[in-house]
Length: 289
Image 1 (cartoon, one colour):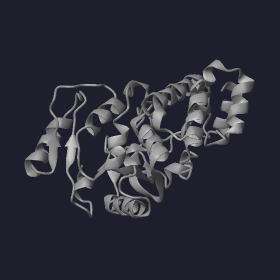
Image 2: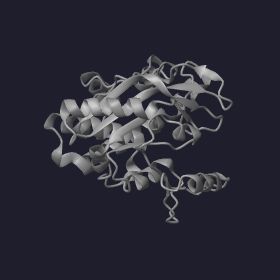
Image 3: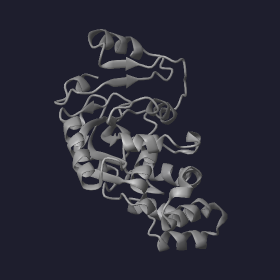
Image 4: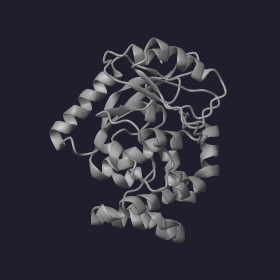
């Protein structure tokens, strides 16, 4: 929270919705609100989702500000994060127009619970390429980390049209897909967030060369791929009528891959250049996908 209040750009409000926390989080937030009553807006509606993705979709229905950033954890923002991201979005809006959905995202600096450095680059640590922003790549792998992104109002309005958010793998992935389909997804190749990696993180940074990571990925790759096909079906249900015909064909065929043979699936991946970010993951895709 302190890193938000020490940003070089301070022209923003903080919308907060507690999703059933059992610690002192809301007490701490309440103290911040007392000191900054116009900056902190607590949404107290007694709704609980027990899912960060569902909670964010709920919050995204509220703000009407021109630009929105996400913060859902105890990660620390670099002091000029908002300033740099805002500048990037404004540059893109000048290029394609304010009415188009735009999302800017950056790299992160991976640290442990005590802020000891693990990796200067989350992208390198995760073997995740920030320039993989085409829809064929985004169907199978997300490149955006929620706490390291900012987007415009046009994207918010488009993203919340999602008919069934339970079919979405993660909210930041959905935002990235919608930006790519209807506007622009742009990358800042620098770490603007200190990304704290806790031992109990559900989703976070993992060393993709470790044997433990490889084993875990092989064990869950079938379910992971299935969830991406369910998400593709949701894209079709929500936006199918307004998609570019070629893109619509790609997403529709991807959503049906579960009904195809392994040879047909592999041919599809090759035809549309649908690959995972790392070599190890692509071996898993070839063997199991």
